Image (tube, rainbow, N blue to C red; front, side, top):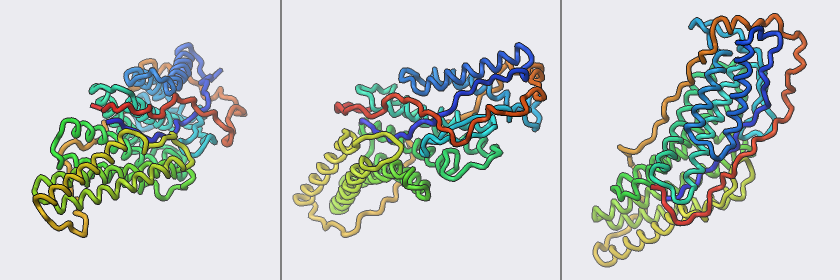
Length: 411
């Protein structure tokens, strides 16, 4: 089944030279700074390189983060923070709030901001792969795995590193709990979409498919509720996506629940379940139009025209017609006024984030290298400190609009 996922823009950042003239007093210290600059530049380039894959991304992130840890971790495993933590200013924009950056002189801010972008890259890689023509089974597994990795990175940042920031996170910013939670839940829901597509293709029990669809709809609804207190100017388009996916998978759940009821000779209840499916599909169709008309950060698309959407509409129509025929010839059951209550729990296929840890400290960081940074040699007048309201140029991202559907399916 062809998938379509909404994506917010990547975070943008100002260049960082890591030039500490006079402070880095030995060749080893200067080399670490040069390696930091080069590995950071390389990682930023990979974010917008459409040929980048998870293996290349992991190698680049491990190198940069292992070097950056030297500005954060104590070399003697004590609780004392590293003397270099506050030596460099970093500027990052937010995915929702335009190009006015947030600036903090804190290496932990750089760690969580870059880590956030790495997680976003995995979601965008999954989106590009899921929209590809003639996707293979292995590629479908890559989509599934990438979304779980992204969820794990977001979760690790929230639980282990964002709380260490000295400057409290402003409301509505990327590193705030509401946004992080929404990204985690969205990743889980989208990974479950791949599971559902696989279950449908392999003709698994309709009861399992209905339960997975119901759990996925609940994920999307939870992600939307998490964003409900944010300014609609920033989160409106994102929330339309979450709303339409909630309705879409509720339609799936009622459709396959109807098939389960029909197989149990409960044809009247099956018809009512399919009618409820039809209702949710109609809501999703209306939300698709609203999504296309809503201004705000994120990809531009017309989801109602995509195969994943049109295919469900045909399935609901055909299944309902079948139930009505069976009821007219065989069962003659009354159709209940109330829709059946979905109390479905999936025992298989539920997605959990892949646990994530930042790499260990790079071997180039030795006590001698750290000692070679003489903070007394820093210029007293830090004129290089950036202005907080200065704009940062957005990253030129590859075109991630879903390709025109060709009727292909995700295995």
